[in-house]
Amino acid sequence: MKTTNVNQLLAWATTRYGLLLVRIDAIHLNKSIPTIEWSAVAADWKQQWSGRERKAAALKLSEQHSLSLLTLYLGDGCRHPEALTIAVGNNKESKPKRLVPEMIAAAYECGYGKLLDAIRCEKWSMLKKLTPQEDPVHAEFAGYRFWLIFGREHFTLRARCLLKSEEAANTLARALARAGVQARVRVCTQGERKYWLVELSGREILKLAER
Image (cartoon, rainbow, N blue to C red; front, top):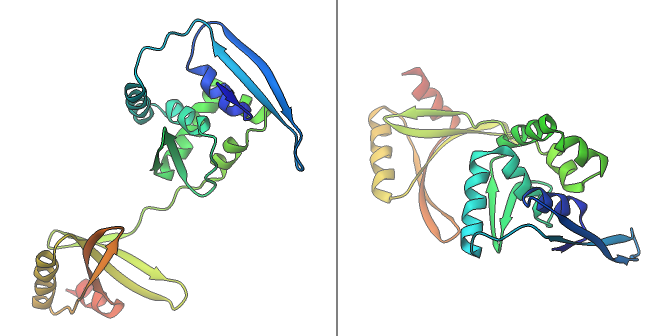
């Protein structure tokens, strides 16, 4: 493998046991910071899986172990400062930020975190700056889950329930009407998919809470 990122070299090396042949192939003189191009060969490593099998095994391990997820994260040369994004081949997958503290703790527990600090790994620093999002506040009505959304700009409160069919949205709206609560039903899209949104204003939420 070849890379100009030391963290990629380390992540690659930790998954291949035995003798490693590492050398410097080139030094790139850029306008900003000079970079070193590393080349590594795992002399004792015998590849056991095909390309698809390797990707499937890597993703499975990343779901089971925090260090495996960290290895996948560091092995990707792309930078995603606002999200925990994992790239395997041409596929990219976003992971919940709540996994970040577990990844950091696992790295420090085995000493890997100290090594990443010592080499000033940029992606490691990005990871430590990622803060998990707070769990959204929700409430249930007749088996349907509503997410409560507060608008800071105009100090407005809304409750929203996303449904996959117009029939389900209208059924929920009728159930709310029987409870004396007026709901707004509208269509929204996410990518190529169409959804139906049942929305309550702050006043209607109060009516429902007082029941």
